[in-house]
Image (tube, rainbow, N blue to C red; front, side, top):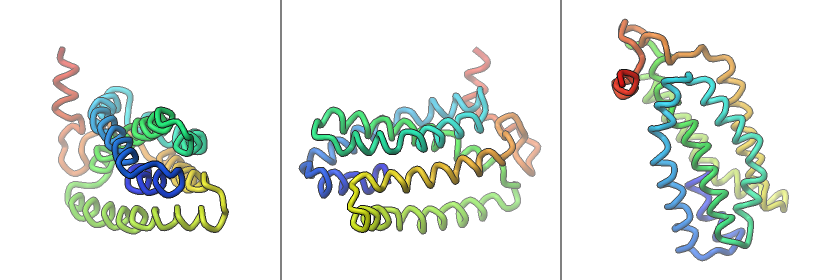
Length: 189
């Protein structure tokens, strides 16, 4: 929602021009792109679970204030809100892929990750913009999509609490360390 639907939100709810909404989204996506790898490396050092918990906890606590910022009349405040969303998403996406790989046995990894992850993403991610529009229309509250982000963050937080830390384990079914070569190179210095 923070990237796919936000341009529509900015245009339809905040009446920001399409070009400005796309500019804001592009800058936020660049921030996301720049931060995913460093945060993934951070998760190699401090663990996947703490980074994922910080991300989902931050999304839960900050969703409403960030949507308030997206609903602001000042473009710089809207941009700042979108960049904070990008950083919180980077903190989730950076370690999440490695976490999924580390938790699934080698013999089923490709199937589980390709089918399970993509099916879930297609259903939930595909329906999210529609749910956001629905919540705004039926509540009359422009910040209602924050509740969807909060609900997703709360569910994710609960699931992550139940996961075992995987950053210091071997890849399931391979006997190989789960550390990335990039992280290993960084520790050798």
